[in-house]
Image (cartoon, rainbow, N blue to C red; front, side, top):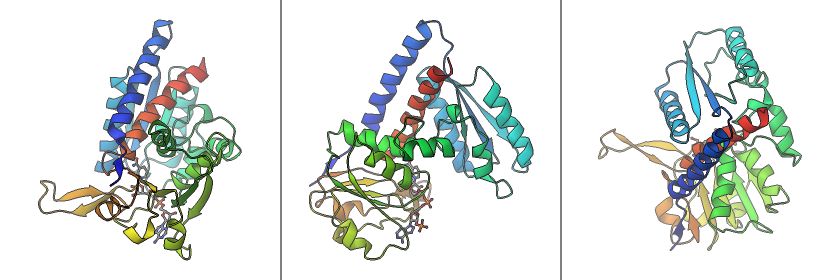
Length: 290
Ligand code: NAP
């Protein structure tokens, strides 16, 4: 039977630490860190994520606002907004809530962020810093995964980590993080064209699923005693739930629970860590600006 990695409890620890650090920072006479969240369009899921981020910020003493724009905003107008936020002295961190509408090139918009305010770690300068082992902002989800492993005393040194998924948001930056000398894992990254995926995943000491397909990882893909980190957040129909759906991960939790040594639940695993790391990054950004 696996031990649950309680992301909610660990995220709460991280948030308390950030709250204490923000208090210390403001008591030295500095303005509170300030997070600007840019929200384009009226996607309800994005709006809900943004509300969560602003609320979590306020709870730890980080100021912030959501700048809302119609879905038909032009790319140039959005770039002007980014420029103003880049140069504003009271804005410490900028987060552009993705996805942006189809007529806007998200890569171009992100490339206009000041990398030192890029608290989501998506600018190519931050991606490059991470890939070459230099300090910089790290995307919040992979940073949260590594924090979960460290705080659960799960060793990474010399371990074989298999990551399923190569997105710029999760899989790729996580591979770079686990490869860093302080983590020293041996990393394999898999994707939709990987052959013999189950054979590879069943050799993993640490198996990370970041795919976006419910219950993709089944019991025969897991090595006994492995640590399973389930990043997936998928909505599946559930007539017994008030909302008509429930959230589930990329891993068949029930089938793998007795095989793994550690496992993250969904919800309550990686998700809460993503917001906690955003708060940490925003505080770092405020310190970087002074
Ligand atoms: P993404 O950009 O869609 O990337 C998915 C990755 O999975 C791609 O690399 C894709 O391979 C790979 N993949 C798809 N089908 C596959 C298959 N049959 N076999 C092997 N690999 C396959 O997704 P993402 O943004 O990384 O997110 C992944 C999941 O994590 C989603 O459920 C998302 O909601 C969740 N997520 C959660 C958090 C959190 O805070 N908990 C944060 C971010 C994302 P190719 O590259 O070959 O297409």
